[in-house]
Image (tube, rainbow, N blue to C red):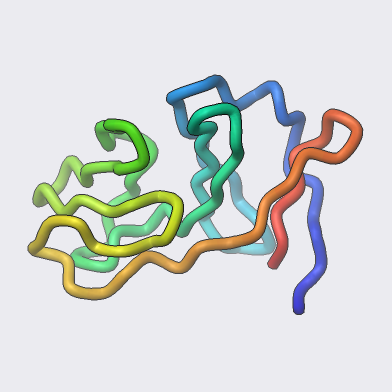
Length: 103
């Protein structure tokens, strides 16, 4: 198991939105879905594009603006090709208002 790292304040991530954080050199996206925080790699496994910057969120999924790959942000699973590899996902929590990601 890794350790939780504080990356910002939990209220920086609004419902239905995502924000990118640099955590020890890893680009990690954090979204708030149904009040819950989820964390996933912000790098598309198809061609390495960032997801959060221009990706379209629909419920629990995010679509890469580069080539249209769709991922489930809660599990990392590929929902729609061309990507074939899932996204790494990370444990995330809110601790006294702080946003923490396990790396």
